Length: 393
Image 1 (cartoon, helix red, strand yellow):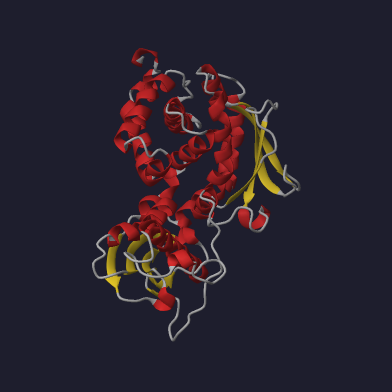
Image 2: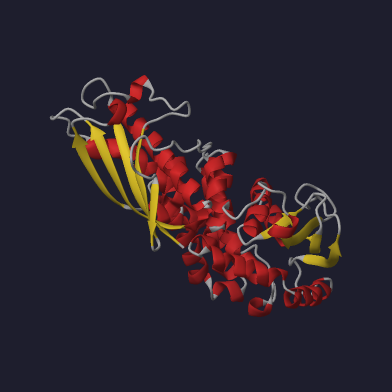
């Protein structure tokens, strides 16, 4: 199999494999949630085992001088992951979610300003001039299998009706060719679905109404700055975390006002401290199953669910305080208070309801230190209360 891989990629197999494994590591908690029956190390082995077969299909695109070479290298890993997940019988929806996590992982460790700097560079006049030259070169088809495209000057109305600074019409898609050659056409919609978010988290408004993967004659990409072209609320600066919340089916409730003499959040330097949140539901009431003592009238499953509700309320307060959850660099520490009988010993398992939620949403940035204590009573007889400390950019 290695002999079929182009020498350029063969020389970089270790690098490409490491990039795939790093992306999977960033999304480790999501793999645990969506593929719970497969140990993470085994999941990595299965994905990297598919990589050589995919690399054998990847065309040479000009090597280090080729504009699309980095995309082919990363795309090979994402396609290999999709193949492995498909063989495990993972649902199409979950395959798309995990491919997205790995594909976008390169942005997760970047601060917001770093991501936006990449967006400004993409929209710059210098980059547009470069893209014009590359578009002309692509139509010479010197590297069969590569992307072929045309540069489009800016206009007043793009595919979504918004003005755009410039565009690219892809006439031939390298990923389409790779997937079709390998019988992986079912993965193409997942790859296409990543485009809007991958640009949005860099502050670039992305419009598109046609794709080659869907049988159209071109992919009509149009770009502008989000603060010029985007519709309010459609793609925002909190795109990474807001998208994750939507994927998890989470809509944060309006934060609850303090009930005593304190404020819900205090920022000191780059740390923000969120006051303790109890298990109030969206109706500002504590559900009967979340009221009372663990080891008594509240069962363990309900206790974990109560801790999760507390964490959601904590995130609602955090969002109200900072505006954009993408500003979170790290969840530093959670403290959980469990309303429990003196002999109740499963305090850590109850607090996992909050910890699991935070890591599901923030990934590696959500891995935190923690304190969990049992207490004799909590406000309004809530089963759990959770507070948090977060580092901001």
